[in-house]
Amino acid sequence: SREVPTPLRGMTSSFVDQNSYIAEAFHLNVGPRTYYEMLRAGPRESLHFQPEDVVATIVTCGGLCPGLNSVIRQLVQMLSIYGVRKIYGIRGGYKGVLNPKSWVELDPKAVRDIHDLGGTMLSSDRGNPPVEEQAA
Image (spheres, rainbow, N blue to C red):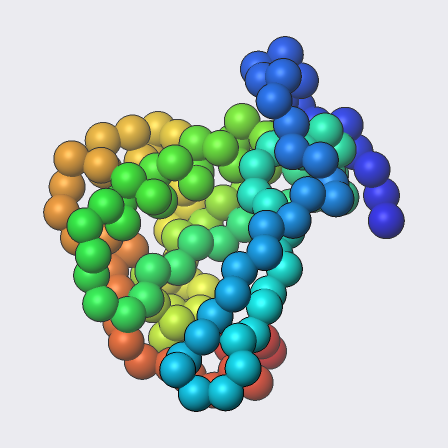
């Protein structure tokens, strides 16, 4: 795997070790407990991708919940800080994945005030097209 230096050096000194995991137990009152080990989230000292080569897409799906626009805004701002130049919002949930012409280009200026709005600027949908169609 590639190791690209983080653009966050100088902005934070608190990096998460690449071998840091969180363990969680799930129990459904039936059968034995299942234990999961998940990679801990947070800024890393090195990245696996060159940020300017990344194309990021953001999709909101399912029912609406408070704060979706704030999440979209923060994602766009952090992706920009990392150096990602192409960020798209997929309108209409997973159904929108099938219609790239409806995608909207996002940057910090486009999302500056969306946290003051209700709902999601991308609109949401509970529909799920087949995975094979979405990945085509």
